[in-house]
Length: 117
Image (cartoon, rainbow, N blue to C red; front, side):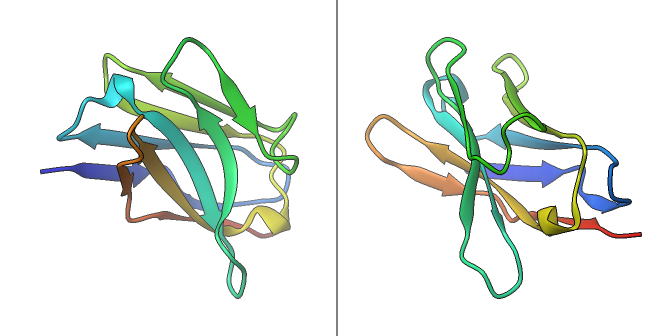
């Protein structure tokens, strides 16, 4: 049974930090590209960052560059998103996505991040 379980969301003040985790099971994690997406109320889901299966290749959306860091630990089947200097516009539900080389896709259930004073 495939599972992606996100955790680490919550309420944080502007300028604060959070680290999200997504732990996977039921598939060959190391062979999948792992991504974080987010969806704010009334907006479409958007890509935040990608950690590809090969080597240390990562990609960031413009909104995440310089503030967010994606990393993965294949031994723990976990992908992380470290978010610094959080802004109110970062408020969203954050989702983890797994993508195989053959385009099989799995999504997590999401974790809420709220940036507010």
